[in-house]
Structures are given as C-alpha cells and as structure tokens.
Image (cartoon, rainbow, N blue to C red; front, side, top):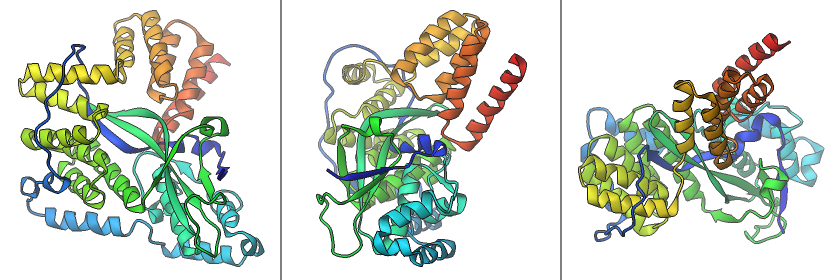
Length: 406
C-alpha cells in the first residue's frame, strides 16, 4: 500500500480538479434507441489540418505552443533559490520528500491557492502562488526533479465534474504526483512511493488510480490550454494547443475531442466529424464525443443520424449535465422560487460541489424568505468556487447578507 500525504489547506480544497477530460458544446439530447455507424478508421496523425488555420502569425503561435510544452518543468531563478535553501536544511538529509512538502506547502507558507482560471507551467504556478491540480503537480514535480527525487504521476478515477463557460461545458478529472526516495531508482509498484494529493482521506479511500506517463501529463496540459482558449473564443490558439496535445500523446483521445470542437466552432464540419468519430472508435463510452457529434449532426440537418447518436448518449448518460440547473434558473427567472429550489436540489444531488448551483439555490431560498439556507448556500458557493474572482464575488455577497441579518 502506498503512503499518501494529503494537503488539507482550506484554500486548496477545490484543487482536486482540472480540465484534462473533455470539452462539450451544449446540446439538447433525445431518448430514442439505435446504433450509430462508424466510418473507416483514421490515425491521430491524420486529424490535424493545419491549412485550415495557417494564416499570418500562426506559425509563430505554433512554435510558441511547442516551446511552452518543452518548458513545463523548467525551474525559474526564484524556484532554484527556494530549492537551494531547502537543501541546506538538516531535515532534508533524512528525507528530501518530506522536506519538499514542508517547504512548498507548510513551513515556508507560500500561501498557494487553487485557481482554475488558467492552467500554469511549474514556474508560473510558483510565481503566482496559484494553480489547478495539474499546475501544482507540475510545480511539485519540477522541484522533485531538481532535488534528484524519482517522480511518477497518477490519474485518480473520481466521478467527472462539469463546469461551464458560455455555451461550453468542461469535464474535469483529477491527477496527483508520487515522489520516490532519493537514491536508487524505484519501481512504480514500490510500496514506498509517497503520493501528494489534495483529496480528503474519505474521498480518496477506495478510489482506483491509473499511472500516467509524463508525455500524457504534458498532453493534458496542452489540452487544458486549448479548452481555455476555446472559452475565450481564440480558435487559432485552441487549434494549435489541441494539435500539440495529440502530437505529444496520440492515444489521449480527449485532445481529439477538443480538436473536434475547435473544428466545429470554426465551421469545418467534415474535420469535426472525423475527429469525434476517431474518439468514439477508441472509446465508445465517451459521452463528450457523443454529445458533440449529436450537436454537429443536428446543425447539418442530418436528423436521423443525430437521433441515433442521441440515443447512444442517452443510454450512457440518462441525465444531461446541468439539465435541472437550467430548468431551475428558468423557473426562478419566471417567478417560481419553490419550483426552482426543487430543481436545483436535484442538480446538487448530481453535482454536490457545483458553485453555480449553490449560488442560484441561495437566490431561490432568498426569494422564499429562508435566510439561513440562503447564507448556507452562498457560503458553499464561495467554498467551491474554481477561481479567486468567483470566490471574492460570492464572499462579498455573503458578507452583505450577514450585515443585513445581523
């Protein structure tokens, strides 16, 4: 059994999630049976179509993306100074792993905060004292490599969690980092690996893990960057990041799904379908790919094919993400707070940590005159917020509410 070191800081509570999973376009889903036909296979190398995005400046952009991917673990000068001070501590001589954990997350009090606003390189996470779980894994791994510690990575198979940006949904997953002892090379099945994780003990217990190759972790970073560019409407950047992710790991189908969404957004339907079918051929249970394919087929007027794809999706995912949330918002806006409350509570059973649901539920309770429940869900919205900006927004609303109540 591997040793697990959990980092319990309140500010990092939502640091367990990061967007390496998939990107979805919003779509209404049907419930009719059937089977979708899959065209002949294509390879990952056949999916990128640079000619669709090759315009002035994009060559520089493509080179910048590749350069960034090559420098994810680079130590900045402040990081090296921090590590050098660590090596001078007597405790480091006994166990560099524990000394590193103390120096990054406890004794030196870097005040790291979880922030899903952007996925950062190791140096960017250290400089900003913030990052999502992937960013913090990169930063921890960079220090560990500098100290001569063996490093390995894991994907923890927790339930997917969704977030939104406009009409895009993002599926989040969880990764952590394992540190080996300084000295002889360790096997990945060695019991003395120390796993650094932000999941509380009860949540981590019994969860299955999959060892990740470092090139897959790099692909996850690039896929995150692509998703973030998509959310900003920067299709050229999104393309080159998704393309680079697929080059780093052709088996990482989430990058192909993201590439499909980029093509769809850019109006390249044939290329989008090819990418989404590529994902489905390799993972027939990918709800992200089926949802995106359903939307694409409907937009092209291919309603019978869309009906079949929607049926496959419905079999895999009977409840679409944010379904009750959207209905609850409409009910509240139409002046039906009790109905909104009931719908939002149903959504919370599916997504208990979804900050937007807590926020809208607080508004429903406020409309019903339930001050205690309003305060509780505003607090939960702040606690579960993925960015510093959202946390501050909810915290401000909570303080104003408490001032009114007291």
